[in-house]
Image (tube, rainbow, N blue to C red; front, side):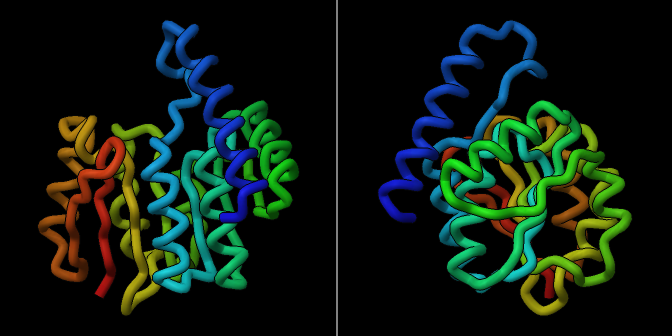
Length: 193
């Protein structure tokens, strides 16, 4: 990521952290990924040469900036889904500041997955409401590209109990390989065979 985009991303994260510190309600917070997780996402997109990327949980667009930068380098496209219209608008403004493009959709993550074609996505980043993840699993594995489609799930260490159900489903699925990376809040990586 070039220095100008990195500076925009840092400003977005700093503003979000200041906002979150004043919020008592967890749902009112932006809950951005840690900087090292954001950088990992950019590396994963490039390493996987992912040209069709889906983010579930845009928030204010901090992680979206890193994904969009990686997708731009790979010559692909990013779709990011956020349930809150105000956050979609904020993410759009933050992407524009960074000089990046993505299709930003205000909608439900589960509905977006159900509408995805089989093998539609080279990489999916999941950072939404953790209790819903197990319900997403059949569509997640179906929508990942066979032969190397990659799923990255945030909070695999920090909220291990909240992702335990989907983790059990992942570990029981013979069509995937998985590992947990202790970066940031922890990232579960899943590769479809």
